[in-house]
Amino acid sequence: MKYSCMYLTNTGVIGDEDCLYINVHVPREKPTPSDNLNVIVHIHGGGFAIWDANFYAGEKYLMDEDVIFVTMNYRLGIFGFLSTEDLIIPGNNGMKDQALALVWIQKNIKYFGGNPGSVTITGMSAGGASVHLHYFSPLSRGLFHRGVSQSGTALDSWVVPGSQLKVANQLGEKLGCPTETSTELRDCLRTRSAKYLVSSSPSLLIGGAINGLMFSPVVEKVHEGAFLTEHPYKLLLEGNVADVPWISGTNEGEGAFAIYLSSPSPSDFFKNFDLIIPRIAGYHDIDDEQKEAITNKIKDFYFNQHGHSHGHEDIGSLIQLITDKMFLSGADRSAKLQAKVNKSPVYSYIFGYRGQHSFMDHFLPNTDHIGTSHGDDVLYYLHTAIAEKKLSEPDEQMKSVFMHWLTNYAETDEPKIEGKQWKAVSGDDIVLEYLYFGGPDEIHSEVGEGLGATAFWSKLPLKENEGLKKLKDEL
Image (cartoon, rainbow, N blue to C red; front, side):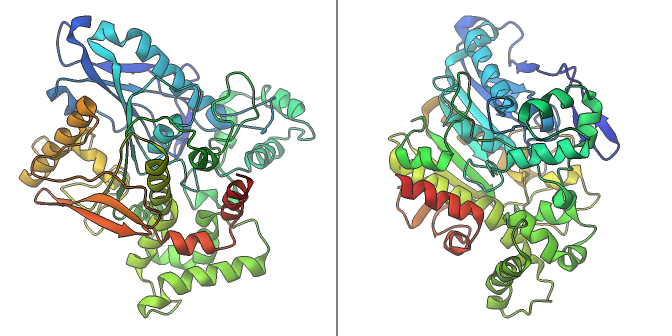
């Protein structure tokens, strides 16, 4: 891929405005429409703000299989997700780019030997949330036939957080633009260079976001071409979701990335705990007294109940806190609700295997002290720059397992693993059925109750909980 979409790095702005390109990888030298191979599409992650189709989604492993593999770019940050929550700047441009890529695949993939009637969409982090959001969009209906969301679902609190008008106005004020009306803001922003707009946008990293909110998907006003006009939670309650199979996967220690990428050390994270956690948990913009009360409840639940004092640096509990809040609780709620309203099966897994490398190796010089973290499951079907030329025997076995269930899923709608039983989610309100990947020889079905401490987080007086309760009461 020649270009990536523009985004901000530690060294400045990279990418280009001319960036909407698709990669199509084929396993044969001379593909023909008669090949009719299953198509696997990957949507890259990066918090809707960074990265591109080539960053970690290499085709090498999948090209050993008889499938077509497609990756795409989509607009990021201000260009992909700026919204004034009205019809002036509706938002979701990045999601609309993804939907257009799926339209292109339907029209053209046969010429690459692909079957437009068998498209599996996969994604990691913001890409995983994107996959799930396509289940709720009228723009995406009929364009895919099953999906895999890794480390991201539509009900994760960071995916459709609201307050996008506030984000737009904050940026406008920073750039010296009038914010009295959306039209004035839009017209002023258009006078600024693309590079300047990106460089002035808030940082992605949790610590960097303390001084600025982030761009993200938004519920749009109803209009022709809208990607999402109701909150996914409301649509799930109504059963208004694409009835095709879905897999939701999370890593056992998802939260480690937020700690190690937002602070020089875990100790530094703990020192700034009362500042960072309200950002992560989404209650940073309330009065100080209430903020302190919520923070103390979180400390009591995650540290005191294990016999630790508030000041004790219990890294394991901190990782669990962030994993629960940002990933597990949303995945738990999403899988249960979707299994309840759809005829098509929903599957869930938790990945707990730490191999030669972690996805975190892309960013840190040494991750041997970090267990399974964010993005680690993608290492076993996507080739990345950190992969060894020759994998260790356990890593090779895990890659074989992932290839087996993914290609079976693309073929049959069922993620079959030889000798293992992967139960579909029942839709029970309490328990969640999932497959646990502890290692190549440690794969087994489990049943969890309230994964991600859902009950604890749902009882806190957070704006997101108040919003979801309101949506539920309206039905």
